[in-house]
Image (cartoon, rainbow, N blue to C red; front, top):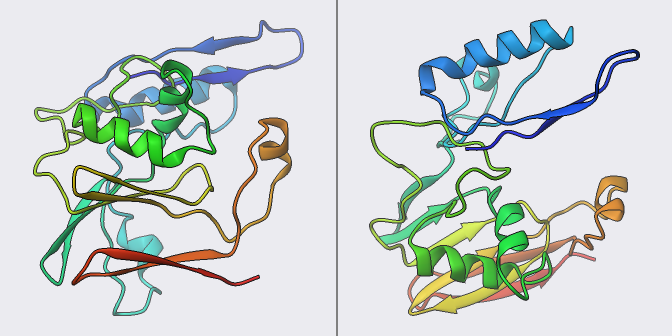
Length: 202
C-alpha cells in the first residue's frame, strides 16, 4: 500500500510519506501520529473502506442500503461488483496506452488480473487484513467503477464493465491533471440481457 501525502509548512521540509502496508487496527493511530507531526488533521483513504457509521447516516431515507467499498451485491440475481476505482490512477502509469479517457481498458485490466488494485506499493492505500478483499472472486456479471469521472463501457469475456462518469463538469484540479469528465450521462442496464443504455441529461 502506498499513501502519498504532501505536506508543506513554512520553514519546514516538503516531502512525501509512503505507507506501504499496515494492519487495519493501526490505521487510525497512523493518522493521529501524522496529524500530530503536521499540526493539522489528516484523514487517509484506506482500502477497503467500511460502511459509513450510523452517526453520519441516521438522516438517510430508510430505503438506502449502505455498503462498503468494494461491495459485491446481487440485483435480481445478477452479481454486481461495485468499486470506487482509486487504483485506476496507479494502473494508468503502468499500462502502455492507458489513459483516463480509456476507463473501459482499466476495468478490463482489473478483470484480467482478477484484482481491483493490482499495483501494490503505489498511490492506492491498502489496509492489510487476513484476506485480500480486493481480489475479484467470484467473477461478477457487472463491474461498476467511478473515480475518473469519465463514462466508459466495456465487455470483457462476458463481464460488463461500466465506469459511471459524473454529474459535475470539469473541476480546477481535473483541468490541471488534463482530465476531461463526461458529465450528465446516466448508464442503465437491462438486468435480463445485460445490455447497457446511456441517457444524456444535458
